[in-house]
Amino acid sequence: MGFNFGAFVGGASDNLVNMIKEKEAQLYEEQKDEKERLREARVEATRKRQADEEEAKGLMESLSLFYSPDQVKDIMSNGKAQANYAINHGEYMAGRGLSASASYSMPKVSVQSEFTFDINDPRGSQVSSQMAAMEKEQVDKAIKEAPVDSTQPFISRFTQPPREDDVNKSKTFEARLVELDFQRSNAKSQEELDEIDQAYNTTLDSYVKFKKEISKSGVDTSPLGMSKSSINATIDGKLSTIVSEYATKGADDRISIAFEGNEGVVFPLMGLAIEGGIDKRSGKIVGGLKQDQRYNDPNFQEFTNAVDGVTLAHERRIESYIQNKEISYNSLVREAADNNAQETYESLVVASGFVPIKSGEPRSIEDVQAGASSGLYKVGQVVQFQDENGTVRTALVADLEIIF
Image 1 (spheres, rainbow, N blue to C red):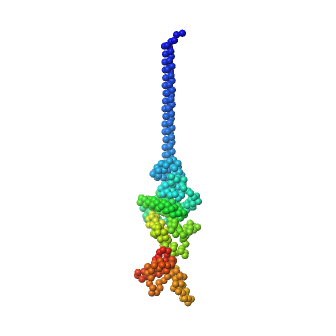
Image 2: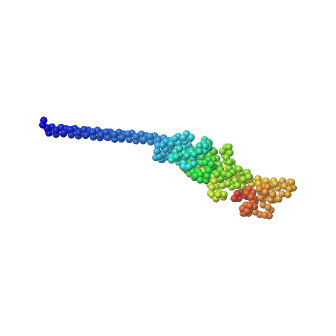
């Protein structure tokens, strides 16, 4: 049988053509599958992006109920988990009639806080649940109370009432300051106290600025006044820090000062707490209640009234103490005369704590100061002296100073 070369070549060509077609078909299918895979991937990416955008939009809408636009932007930049924490915090604050936006702007400190939302510590550093519960009790009492009545009807006729958001912000600032006052009175170290003081001052700066801004816009700030508990917390916080050795907390949570028998030490400390100045025991500058930004600020009239009340009570207590010392001395003199007792000047001074001027022995305030420094006059004694006009006056010998 002969070999047909043409048929062989023709068959081989057909096979090669078929192979090429099959390969082309395979490549086509593979390219089609790859295009379909890429298309599906694009569709899935688009779907996921749209879902993320919808979720982000939902989170932003929820956040906008509680926070300012800039705060929402800042929160969202930290991720969805932090955004959800912020929403939970906003719902919690709103449920208490407070402002999450105000709490978000509060200065952050290492000491736990119920009213400061830190995006980097969204759960809050609640290191002591017991302490947190005690703080909450103090704060709830303050924010539930109505503001101290210091309204000015004539002025309020030309102003508009504050918005609910302004009211909530004001209450949040008050709550945070009450919380800081409580923490300040329970500080365990000077370092912790310094940190709390810094946070207090920064928070107070923001609060005063907030009230001034809305007052300028024609808002009546009297409904945003401080509650009695909030004022008491501020005053007691200052007293418990400066007069700490003689201050105790009573059943009503108010600070009680042990004056009796300690007047010569406590009176100058009270003056320091009210007026501020240099603490002669430590040499440090101390801010008093009258140096608080709220004092003499018309937007905080109720605070000014309360501090003035503390000042008046302090002055009257000193006046009463001085008068009682003189009365005691005169009573002893009369008693000795009635009983024909031979009491010496020195024994009457020791018994009464009052040092009158001896006849023919003038005494100036410089003499009193020198006598106090030398130990001639004791802490707690009331000493008579003559001023530059020859008028007889009295001075109280106190710890490291003379009160006259």
